[in-house]
Length: 193
Image 1 (tube, rainbow, N blue to C red):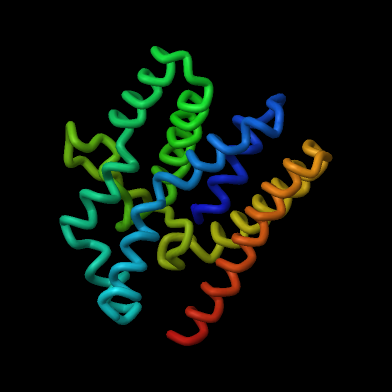
Image 2: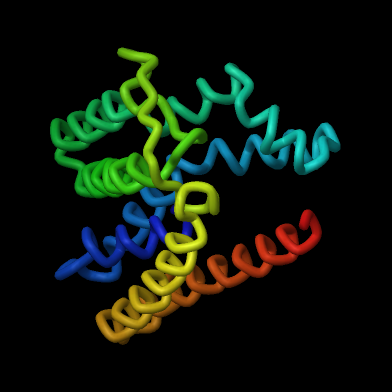
């Protein structure tokens, strides 16, 4: 799933019956597993000037980058984070870990050859799903529009659930980022075909 979709699902599932003040750890938890990919892209594209095909076709699969990505998608490390939050009695850390866990659980069945080692550092096992949220060779042409519909409906539900200004600012921000990402992806896709 695309990062903003993870945030929407986290707010829908884990934010249900919680005040808008619960949004920050849920949003952060939806973002953190993908944060290394944004860092990777900025380094490779902006810092090193790599072309898109090189970035996503070769550099993404570099073992050093993969270790960086896998650290933030590691179930054992997320469970440790959750245990630390529980031990300290930190609601913020607990919600953060729960949101990260939900992110990873949703990614697992939606990555074909670009998934993470979710048991890192305990194992190098990597699940290759028959599905991909983006790759047309693995039902991406069905899953990508389904994700967009999920985000649209999810944002509508969240908008009604949080009538206050603070909640709606979070929802509007996430929706805007998702729309901007889709626009960027469409422009990129049209430029490469």
